Image 1 (cartoon, one colour):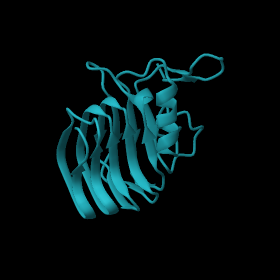
Image 2 (cartoon, helix red, strand yellow; image 1 turned 180 degrees about the vertical axis):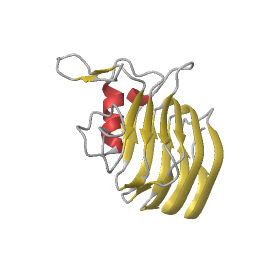
Image 3 (cartoon, helix red, strand yellow; image 1 turned 60 degrees about the vertical axis):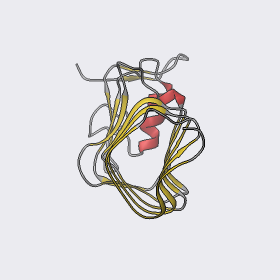
Image 4 (cartoon, one colour; image 1 turned 135 degrees about the vertical axis):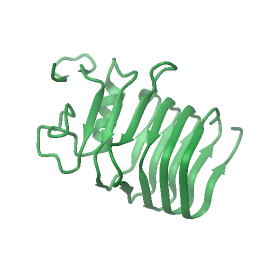
Length: 178
């Protein structure tokens, strides 16, 4: 059937699909159920993911465009060992830009971040704090004032695959016990 979102009760929202769609050019009802009705903000889709009871094994699929927003993920966005959650670009041309930070992962576990270009960020392109079991794949991080990818205290057991960092004071930086 067609995925649907139930936000009418006092209980946490439910979503009966496994993919939340994001497209900055979408013109539908912003429920995330398909590309036509996609969220126009990545953070809005992440906020719903973080509120869901049934969030393990979910994918937030982002269609090409320039998204001028900081993305903030925390423990509510974590998956589990056998059902990681994923934030994935649907195709080349998905860009996160502007802001102090590009993508922040704070205490996130079992999560995949894949296929994004992060650029023109004041401080950190991707900032990771106390997060474990992450896969950062196919990332291009450019023009960040401090670090392209920054692993801060308590971040371990993470995998970087196929990434490129340029025009940052530090490309990939590890800080504190990691």
